[in-house]
Length: 87
Image (tube, rainbow, N blue to C red):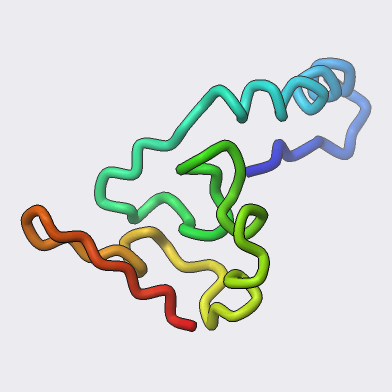
């Protein structure tokens, strides 16, 4: 997830500071996946320190749904978790 920079000059220095620190901040945070309805499997940094599309570019190129939610890819049945990457 990248910060959105405003187009107007009002508050630009504040947003520039946020943008410059974003990488450091983002590497220290994580998403709470819960049901997986608010976290993108490939696009968001939710496991590891970077999006899965960056960690596994070859697999990402094969996926049919690059915008998939975690809930669309992961299935949990008790202690058993399965993944359907839709390749």
